[in-house]
Length: 208
Image (cartoon, rainbow, N blue to C red):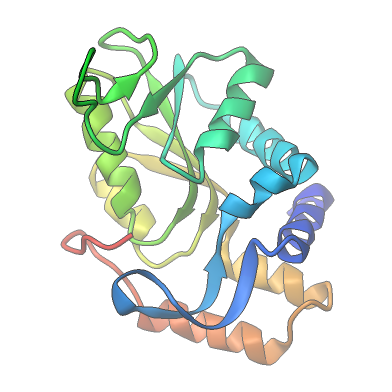
């Protein structure tokens, strides 16, 4: 892993995007680490750095459009769109109930290749929802770039649905960087790694 990614991991930690403790996640689940990329909208330099690293991954993948999974990945996809001059579309959480009644905002054509942008993959549920919408609208989706793969089964679920993910960090890599940077202890690393082993998701799970 190159030095810029290591520097970025520390910046994300210092900005509060990576938190440790007994944290309640979705549907009452608890996790020893929580990754909240929404905070980077208040840190433009970090947001730009994350988008630049994602763009490096994206540049290796043929695509016509970008689509960020709502909501945390939307600003990242927007920065990538502007810097790479790649058109972006947006998936709404719910279909618009008036005027155009769209579920996707933006201009696209059936058959175009859309690259999905996501912040974190756990079970893959949120990305699958976006994938279903895009494919229903006639777009081709076979790749996604993500900031963090928690390595809890989501990548396998997405692969089973025809999508390969490309991540800046895996969770083991992230905690190792933070340990080597003096931000967390080996004990914290061990707790996180044990959590990964104990909390795995499969194709039948619907959690994010």
